[in-house]
Length: 388
Image 1 (cartoon, rainbow, N blue to C red):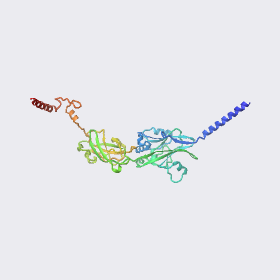
Image 2 (image 1 turned 180 degrees about the horizontal axis):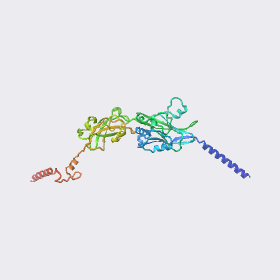
Image 3 (image 1 turned 30 degrees about the horizontal axis):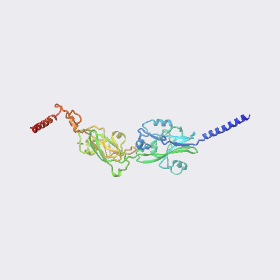
Image 4 (image 1 turned 120 degrees about the horizontal axis):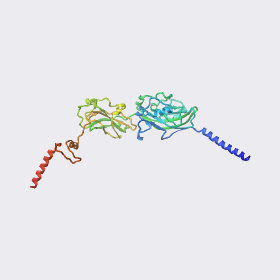
């Protein structure tokens, strides 16, 4: 009997411990965390390298964003799988989630959005860019970059809601560092939050190069340019060249003079085109006219390549920054690539059959042979005279 009572007492103690453990599990503290490696990522068609501020939104990211905001995880995945769209993917680790809870994403320039929400006084200093009440733990949140660029508080996050601005928002010439907050909210307040401060957007490109000169090469155009002293530290990380074939190639002003050619494209009737306009930012179809690029903040010369000889081209140069934002085009110049004949090429064209510095001539093909024969005859007669 004592043994039986002792066993019951032991079971009672074990049960109490188990109930306490289960109760503690049921009251697990809510928390939100963002892994520094996987918590934040911009999903884009063309990846950038780590030197190009991969967590920042540039102008191309903005243009490539979808026109509508998304909410459900299934819709988020469908949109993220579309390589034509750019999305900010936030992958929070959430504990203590309950039915009717929601996750909100806020951004600010520097304010603490948790404190702003708790105070709820004055003009909002944080922009709400996402809200998810049907959040499934282990799935990402997809934020539209245009909402971030707009920096306007949003209230409606249904699937069909238009994002905070169309393509016109991408023309904003601004640069902002941003702080992002993922906030776990319940009806009675904030349950947990996580902050990410390694992001922002920059839609500005460097100012345009000036004093562009263009000279012909064999399927190339040699370029030289300058930057105004006040633009030296304007963020240029490299330069991109654009070449547009003339509308009516043909007999044109001789471009074979020194670097600089025959002047601006507008002044050459055989170099008329409409694709390259000084002071405009290359985008759309203009990007298809790229004919070379070079990295280097201090670089002032380059070589456009892949061109057709004896065709007039309008050429211009644009500086780009570390994010890949292109600045406006330089003045537009005109040049005509053409065949460059070296001494060895002339020799081969004259019938030379040898390689390197040695040559074998065929009298039938080479007009140089009679001259060489005459020189040899003169040398032979001169040496014979010296020996007599």
